[in-house]
Image (cartoon, rainbow, N blue to C red; front, side):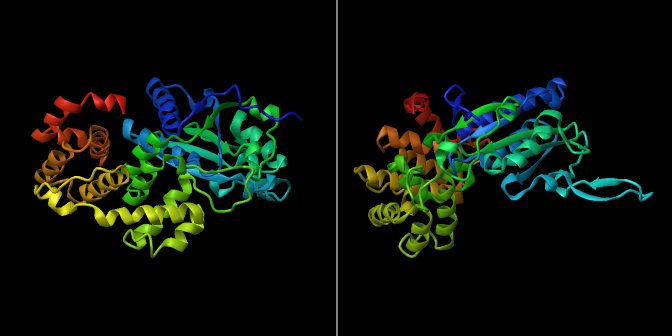
Amino acid sequence: MNEVKLSNIPTVSVEQVIDELSGLYIAALQSGTPFKTLPSVMLWGAPGVGKSQAIDQVARRIEKETDKKACVTDVRLLLFNPIDLRGIPTANAEKTLAVWLRPQIFDMDPGEDVVNLLFLDEITAAPQSVQAAAYQITLDRVVGEHVLPDNCIVIAAGNRTTDKSVSFKMPKALANRLMHFQVEESFEAWRAWAVKAGINGKAIAFLSFRKDYLMLFDSGSSDVAFATPRSWEMVSKVLDQFDGDVDRAFNLVAGLVGVGVALEFRSWDSVYDSLPSIDEIFDGKNPDCPTNTDALYALVSAILEHARLVKDDLDKMANAIRYADKMPPDFSTILMKDFMALEEGYREKLIMVPEFSQWLRTKGVLLNGS
């Protein structure tokens, strides 16, 4: 059997996946197009690139743009065998025939005010007997005797065989039933998500300084700890438990992204000790601004972290914007983009701040080029 080739399918970022798929499904809802007439989706990508996170964001986008509740059912096919997908056999009421009890994972709300997203994750890691059972789901929207509700969207995801993770070649018959995308990391898209998701500021700042460390997956390496968007999210959760103290959390961080990256992260973290007082910046005292690049990335992160705490105090935000205006233009632009992403609709709040309007007049053109 020939391997499914990925060279002739679109390569997109996680943010593009979210935009493309949510746009498709929202348009279908608005036009009354049945989901069963749309092709099911297959997301290919390296481990940890953010495929699962993309589906959650698609669901949230659907909820935001429609009046419907979006529910994600995450099915890890690697953990299933074909009989699991069909259910448990039992006797009918007359004790004459076998009937199949529907698996709980397919117990979805069929209501008109609900959208179900059935996410068949790790499909390429499932044995081909399980992939074959997925034929019915992706094409006929049935599982044995059980029919998926009309409000259900089917999306599959898996690693590429070239990633050398647990992966089986996808049968061509199954591949032809799917609309394919290859997902690759994009730092800018990841950073925009990370700001909204509350990822630890030190992780964001370090990766802004070393963008190439966002994704260090190497299919030819035998390393078990390596940097991916998923492992950096876990680093963020660890750092949050230690108040951002990289030194105290060093072994835990190294266990997630590897010793080499963790050592660079710890060394870079020492830059924080030389930063100006963040409280003074938000109090309008205008301390001196550093000039070296690594300190500027750290400063942007530290200001953003504090802005998350005081974003409702527009006077303090005005002081921070005034301070940002004297930073180098590219760093000032990064910070303004982060401010606008603090929460949904926050740009509209910032427009009320004269200092922000002034910044837009003098440097706003940089937003399109950054």
